[in-house]
Length: 330
Image (cartoon, rainbow, N blue to C red; front, side):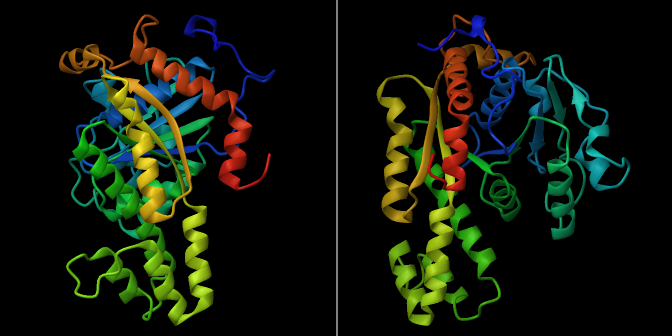
């Protein structure tokens, strides 16, 4: 039996999680799935295991993560760094009321910030990787624009949040497919023979649509067996983790298993992990409405216990998770 939240202690002498990589991305389909709440509470519970965490509002077009922490005014945002008003991200990583948690706020009022050019994006990613923290969690914007997908793909640990609603499950699958094909497009962007095939696989209005990953692999093989092998490698190396939020019944918990089955069948993705299920918590809606921290922290609340179990298992099985990501046998 796992210890309860009141019995939290380090799982090794140093108190550090075994995971070597520290960059997380939390994404999903459209808004309204509680993705930012999930990001915040994942960060919160990591701090309860004595981890130093930086939570990054990476929704460059509609930043609002600070409001979920009850912060009404922020002095510095990502705009200050991207526009060179500060030299480092450490200068804009503000302490919060939660010990061990700092926040980097996004900015939605700077023209052009929601669509940074390639150099700006690379500069930001490199700076994030250089921050002093045990973990960095990127709370991504809704949708499947290229910037959101690029941030998602840049992280070693990719989390997709869904809810049990059919539309959310469809959007979650769409997000995963878009991320996979964004990775494929970036790899073969300069190949004029392969890009039309990729277009046929993503445009269902095309008269010569390619309707499955297997068909795309076969089409690649007709151009070059080497390219088909490379495409298979991209698919085999693509890994992600699923969380179902706003769970109200035992049936709702199966939503991530359904998505896993679908992406295995239609996208050939085998490395899909199920991180956990978070019960619906009406107190979160009340907290957000009152501009109070939206934390699932009460030990008598099922939502808090859901996050605790998620993070506890993540830490306990850190070595196994790292091996899965690196495709190394334990």
